[in-house]
Length: 131
Image (tube, rainbow, N blue to C red; front, side, top):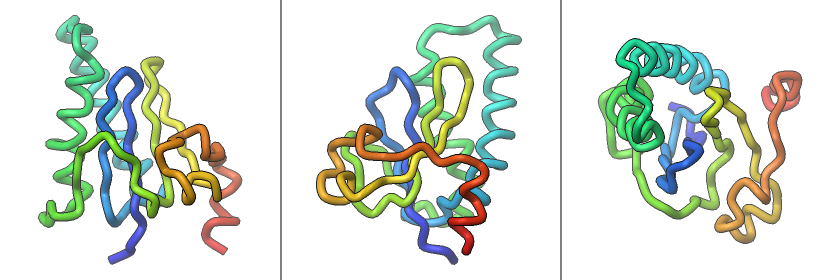
């Protein structure tokens, strides 16, 4: 099992979801994208838009967490502090976009800087990360 810690952040919610493994873009992005497609469809069909950031974090923990954790939930946590070992941060915007961020040296030194100390990851960076 790959030890690739990550955070999942939702715009408008201070909760920080942390997974201590399985957090690489190849593992997270396809599953997260499918999950979010379903989440947004359900919200659109129901006409519900109140408390969307809170609902989204809850469903990430329950529904997405089930897929991500592979029956071992000990690697999944929710808090308000960034972990210094996170290799990727996935930010879900209110505009329904997902952005992947890579922590830089300043983040490692002071994780409380959050996304301010990260660089945006691009799809073309995949080869560099895998190499």
